[in-house]
Image (cartoon, rainbow, N blue to C red; front, side, top):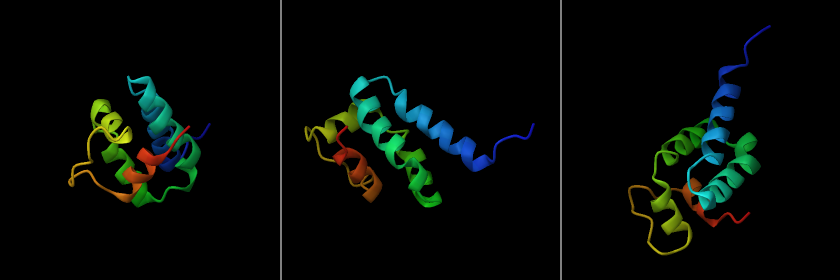
Length: 87
C-alpha cells in the first residue's frame, strides 16, 4: 500500500483543523469555507490558510460578525473570503 502524496495529507489536515475549531460558529464558517473551496486553493493560499488557522477563534468570530475590525497584520484576501462566507 502506498502512502498518500504530501499535498493530500496537507489538505486533509487543514480540513480537519478547520472543522474542529472549538467554537461551533467557527466550525461552520471556517470549516464550511474550507470544505467547499479546499480543492481549488493554490499552494500560496494553502500556506495562508495554515497561518489563518493559528488565529484564535474568538478573534475570527468577532471579525466575521463585524464586532471588531480585522487588524492590518491579519488582513488578506483569503481571510476576507472566509469571513464573508455564510454556510
